[in-house]
Amino acid sequence: PPTGGGHDPLLVLDGLEDSGIHLKCLSQRLFSEVQVLWTDGKGENLTGTALKTNTNTTSSSMVLRPGSGNAV
Image (tube, rainbow, N blue to C red):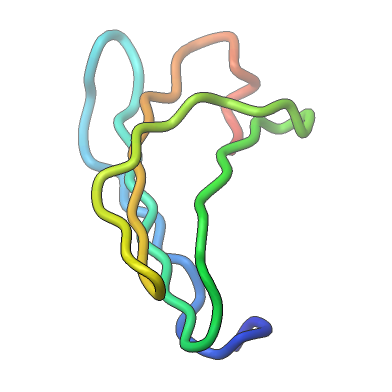
């Protein structure tokens, strides 16, 4: 597992939305605060929406649209 224990992030393809693909990411760590940072294939930051967060778990979603390099 990644540093801090817990589980590898889970990426879910959650259907089509606004001419793009709706994605969700869920992550958990045992001993540290966790954050989700979305980046495209070039390493540029993308805007996501926090869904649920506490000290050890977080989830976020975003819509991957055409022109974003088709990678996150």
